[in-house]
Amino acid sequence: MKPHTFWKQLQHRRCSTQGLTLVETLIAVVTAGVVIGGAGYGLAAITAANRTEDARTERRMEMSRALEFISDEVKSARGIARDPAGELTVQSPSFSLPSGAQLLMVINTPRASESIVYYLAPPPTNSVWQGPQVLYRWGPAFDTAGNYSNSTTPTAWTGRPLLDLVANTPGAGTCDTTNQTQIPANSANRRGFFICLDTDGDTQQGRLASLQLSSTLNRVIGGNERLNLNTQAFARNSSSGSGGGGLPPGLLNPSNNGDLTPPDDVSLRFQVLGGAIQCGTRDVPVTTDLYLTAPGATTATKVTLNPNSPLNQPPGTVERVRVESIARLSSVSCGSNRTISTGPGRPNPNNFRVLKNGDSVPNFVPYNNQASLDTFLRPILGADGRVRIRDNQIIYLFELGTTDSTSPAFDMQDNVVLVTVNPETIN
Figure 1 (tube, helix red, strand yellow):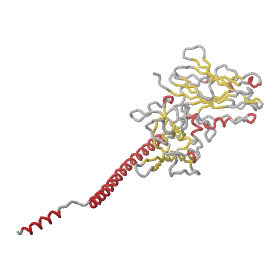
Figure 2 (figure 1 turned 135 degrees about the horizontal axis):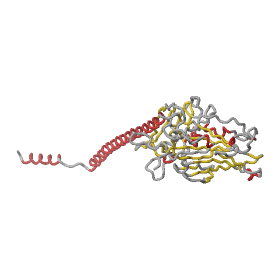
Figure 3 (figure 1 turned 60 degrees about the horizontal axis):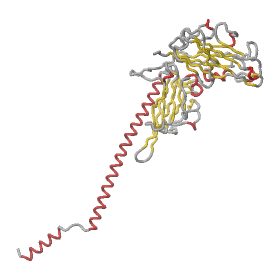
Figure 4 (figure 1 turned 45 degrees about the vertical axis):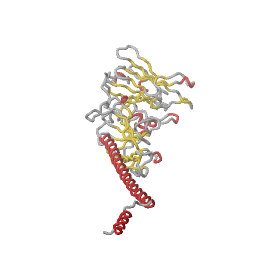
């Protein structure tokens, strides 16, 4: 090969192996960045979508489990209260609604001495439970076999979270207000859980309920998402009575004339429901006293009931209870005080009545435009005018204005006291 030919080939080879220019390098970097960035965003979007779908699936499972749990509890019940607030003091006297909570369900079950309560409330501060609302259940605990473990000791029941992340506002579901009772009644007060209770002729409780549940899902991309679920629940227990296990034998022996003689394995809860007595246009103060005789004691201890706070008497602490109601007539310059008391040999035994579940309410006309007796008993009256309380409860009615049963003032509504008897185990 000639020297000048070799030299030209060498120069050509050197030119073919030169690097990229600066412009070409920048273009390559930008192109690679776009490709890698797009791929990264796509990967992030796919990851976020997977996380969202996993969270959505998990949330729906949690919502389904919660609704299934409530449905199972309703199935074994006799009904759900149409007016939960109105029946709470009678059906679940041991329960106290937390501040800021919304009462939703009072479930009348024969398997426990008090009704089970469901309510919504914001989560506690620094809690693992997430808001805006948490669905709580107040009722008996469960043993390892899934049965109630403390069904007769409602004072030991606590409100436990069942589901968190419940929405502050309702979902798309609505109630048929013509054929259903909506709980809560005011649509403006509905949150992420509400109930549509079918109308079936029973003004106190219903059996077929539509449970409407709405939850908020916090998505990684795209903001919050609303999840809605609903299910039907039917109270199938049609046994007679209203739950609570009944009254123990001998508690109300006729010879005791209204005194209570409880066995040592029950607790007692006393609660003033209301009443009204007037002297002219003046309201007369009324006091309710309990005389508690401890086992083996010869004298009784007097305890005055606070009308705004029920009294709980633990098991084994009392063997006899006398209930006494006093009209403080002297405090309004209307003569001497009048006392009506239960117990053998007590004067004016016709001035009080003891009512149990299913009893008819005395048909007395209220005196001097006072509220009628069924005003105080409305939460516990059935459509037939009979008392609808739990089988382990009794009602005391007192007439304090007069001892003359023919007088128009004799209306048997001057004081109304509820007693709940709960079997308990003594350790």
